[in-house]
Structure formats: C-alpha cells, structure tokens
Figure 1 (cartoon, rainbow, N blue to C red):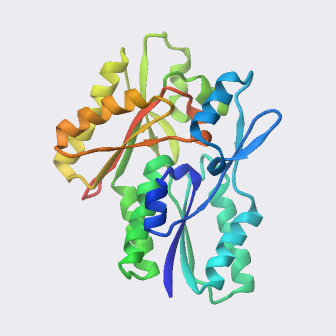
Figure 2 (cartoon, helix red, strand yellow):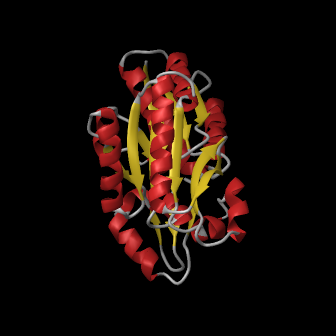
Length: 285
C-alpha cells in the first residue's frame, strides 16, 4: 500500500509541489453576496479585485462532507492509506468534516487505514506539515511514521504575520487573542501569530518597518537555537513587499527564499497588504 497525503486549499502549497509529491487538495469556498467560488478555481488577482469592489467582506465555507467522503473513498478504492492534514479546527469545520468522513468510510471499508490530523494552523504552516508527510510517504515510510513526521513538523514551526488592518480579522471573527488591540491607537502595528490553532498577538510596535525587523529577529533567534528546516514568505496581494521581505531573509541565511501568495479564504479573514514569514526548525521550538 501507498500512503497518500490529503490537505486543504488553505495550505497554499504551489502547484509544482502538489504535483511533485502527489498531494490531494480539497477546496474551501469563498462566498460573495451573489456568487461563490471554490478557492482553487479563482485566481488570486481576480479575487482581490472583486474584494476591492465588494461593498461587504465575503464569507468562506469548508469543503462539504460529501466532498471529503469522496476524496477519501477514491484513495481507499485505489488501495492507498491516507494521512489527512487540515486547517485548524479553531478556524474552520474542515477538520471536523474530515473526521466525520473518515468514520463513514470505515463503516463501508473497515480495513481502511486513515489518520486525520489537525494542523492547528493554516497557510504554509499547514503546508509544510503536509509536505513533510508527503516526502516521508514518497520515501516509503509507514502511515504511522508519516503521521509522526507531520506532528513533529507542527511542533517545529512558526508563523508570524502583520495585517495591514485588523478590520478583516474583526469582521470575520478570527481575531482570537489579538482582540485586545481593537481599542488601541492607530499607530500600533501588531505582529500576530498562530498559537494552538488561534490567532494571537506576538508583539506590537509602532511601524511596519519595525514589525518586519521584529519578525526577522525572532526568525534568527529560532534558527540560531534550533537550526533551519525551510522558510517561506507569505503575502496577501503585496508582491513588492514580499520580495523586499524575502531579500532580507536571503541575506540572513545565504540562500533563495520562496514567496507564497495567500489565497481567497485566508485573504478574506486577514485582508490585503499582509506580510508574513513561515518556517520550521530542525528541533522543537
């Protein structure tokens, strides 16, 4: 049997890596007032144009139970074992639907081997966990070993980001422990992170430049103590900002740093203009 990785569209893994490691993606949906799109079926540029023109912030929804069941069943019928790694259960019902679908599959296919993992995060913090599992699977590891690698990666990763505004997080109900910032003066620039599945405040400074430097400082501190696995720069409709941020990190580590745009679902909840850094280390943080 072959172990296959399933994750969801909020991992924002590149098409190249999805194909290389044969990862299956189940898509969340963004919903405007009069139309809706599966995240994987709308280009980021098109979405952010629509977001700019929209009079209200769109909502999002998890993959349906039927879709989750279908993707699991296809793999089981292909004689695959499955490790599913999904968006934080604190942010979406995606993980819950995956667990329900797994239980339904086991009623019909009692010998199926399926493990469902809550990444407790999103974006490439989720993506790195899924990729780690996919690499282990391609190297012939057992389903237990693949799942263990995924969980270990989660313990060794960090996601830091700066939203351009807290408006989207507030309206989307995803602000978590950063809610204390809502009443502060406008000059505060929050640095946010994801802790145990929720958005939390990491630090707050006065300027965007200082916020980026604070993220860089934390990155250097972490990799100095724990080594560097991989690193990725995230952005929400701010290519130039991401390129400048990546250049700073490249100068720190002496190698190229990839940039990953954040798509519609997380973009809806965080808002355009955000910049972030995701990385994992060689030992537990």
